[in-house]
Image 1 (cartoon, helix red, strand yellow):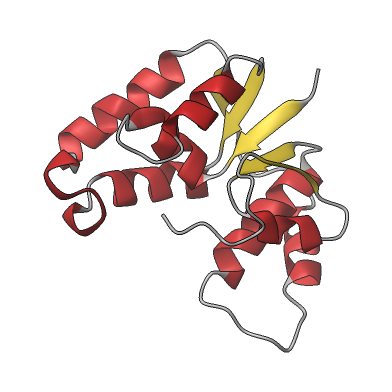
Image 2 (image 1 turned 180 degrees about the vertical axis):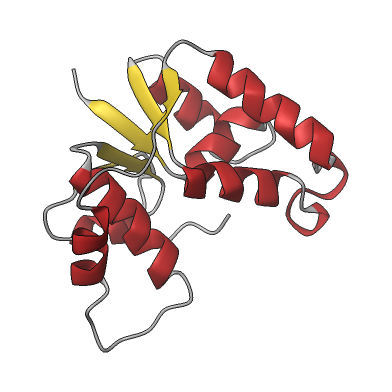
Length: 148
């Protein structure tokens, strides 16, 4: 069975019933056995889950964001992964391009993490399909980038 690296939007969709992709994420997690969280997905989850601009009255306090994160991590399917050896090699290779996007650093870091640790990146963002060498599962039916 593959091991997965869910991106931040998947973690948010799992945590917030009001998230437009909550049901898709819940359906996916029922089929997963081994899900990893890295420091970037952890920090992104905490940052966005507590953002009232994104979640309005549903935004979590900082301490509540930690509690919700801890609840996710108490699920036996989840574990925290430190950076794998070789990550920087892949990250540099994936960012050695002339174009720019505001998300390029974080997205390519997650892709490099997944490649270096032989994980399948689970996302709602169809743009990850274009990353060479990346095993990716896009839960969204759209090829468009899904905003947080």
